Length: 513
Image 1 (tube, one colour):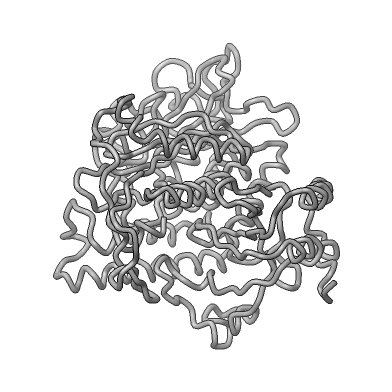
Image 2: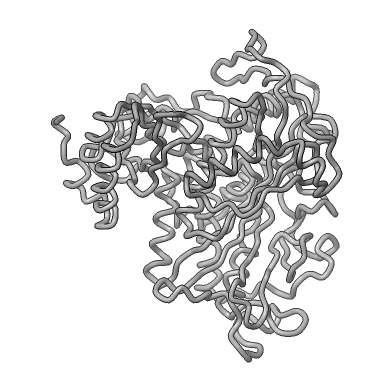
């Protein structure tokens, strides 16, 4: 055993439940015919990064953790180096980041899966730590854990249902050429594709059947991996698919979203197809994709839905103006949580919609929001409330997110905003019967505006910390800066940006997400 043996135990990084899961996993590994385990972690963009290790090495990591480089943290969405890693402080003013050092990834035993499409290969999610045992500053999974602990301290838990749109296409090229190759800070052209179905025949069974061979393989794989798939359907654009998943505890839902995206891309590619979670691909006739986050708070012990309106309740805290017409659709706590999402909705967009491309969704009468508003069961609102007296499944559906969002940051920012609403008894105001005509704050129209709004929001600095916030803003502004340089080269600007997705966006996001 290495000299770092006992790292997990000595720093108390696992709960009792994780220790039990690790013991069971050790026994299971001995029975499975595995030759490699992918030790995966989420980068700051919410994309899965991994190292494949042998079974003996993996079993050692269940005691000692495993060394990785911090490099993936320092790169933006095209792997452009954003921080001067080899200067003192790593370009971040942090001595512990000097010289691109190693950190530890610690497997989370409960996330282990055997990959159905990759025989003999296991997969497990890991958490990042410094060698001191302190959580890694820039781990988005750690940030979500922290917010979930805040809820747990109040006797509450976070429950999430996933509803994600993406595109399935046929690969029209079978090999990479020079034009496909990337360099740091510049992504080559993605593989050419053709549509898998003609599109714009919402819920057409015949069009869905054209995609059935792929959808069946995906459904089979998700089932084998224990993912709670509920439905798959053809959406609006050509090859646009929506997948929904049953409600899960917050961390499990975020983990499943990360695995869902990476599994979908890998399975489709092996079958000669291409899957992309880019919001609006630069392809003729393609419609923007969204990620709708269904969220509720429950009592941690009983599981009772805390957003469900109390039986026979009248107006009360967070209800008077919030009710709009008739009784409020949520409990008083739920209306205040909703109020927090409203109050911080603009700043949250830098997490819910973190790409240049995602802001092409925010159009009037588009099934995507264009302003911060709420309504009861109205798909034009940013926050669609689904609740009524006796509604055990009462929840808030946030429709602002894009499918490329980092799931950990998306969910964490919702908890931060919602708890602030609860703590300050924030009233969301009346519901909006005409969401696209309401007198509400407009959503940012660009990533630049969203980042500026986030930079000016003290709440997220308080909860995520200055170190993470300065890092995240710099990382995303580096990505934005490359786009602005491209526009300048094209003789354009953000103000003069047309309706059509640019080639830069297609290169940057189509394969990455």
